[in-house]
Image 1 (cartoon, helix red, strand yellow):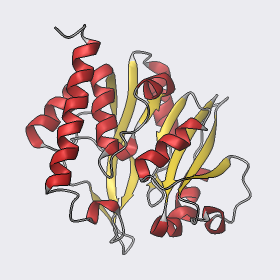
Image 2 (image 1 turned 180 degrees about the vertical axis):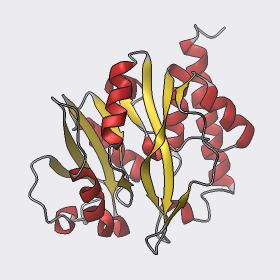
Image 3 (image 1 turned 90 degrees about the vertical axis):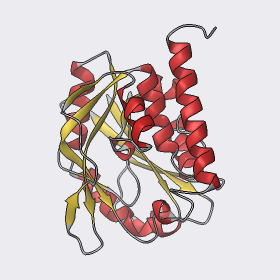
Image 4 (image 1 turned 120 degrees about the vertical axis):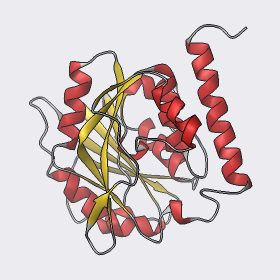
Length: 249
């Protein structure tokens, strides 16, 4: 059985690939499981291989026309083969046991479609700090609960950079929303509209904070683009909620 890890990479993100690989190569999986790492170059001039010294057949690098990180993630999904699909940004790092915990939950709970986990921020000096938002209690996340929190607070309570998803559910949604940013939030709320999730209380990701990341762009949290992204994400989730509960009247 295979779990696929999908990683978009462009520009400055290449300099962190070796550390992302190191965090992946040390993962210990349950018997009978293996991983593949689908690195998707967002554009033809990325040359991710130059930043990965390891000759590891589990690492699969490909490129596609520049479309942004969420398009690149979806292209990585298209050439992956795992029954579960895990996201890992090129500048982030998995913690020990992260993949095994995702697999354990999804194997033990067939009605759960996706998992997320606790996150710590990885600062530029190498230190870490707790993620700024309060986490839910570990365990099942009832369908619709992520949407309810997002509507009230205009931000997700759980971090979409930690998602691990059953392949058929991810395929049903067509992968990540093709937005310049927040496509992973759109996916999270889409998943929440269709299935229960599960929050893993152990830290599963070190989320790197640095000046070159997409979240530092001035349009990320305010302005006309932000309003348009949030409007479409909400409309997408509400449409899925209506259709999954029955044909809209």
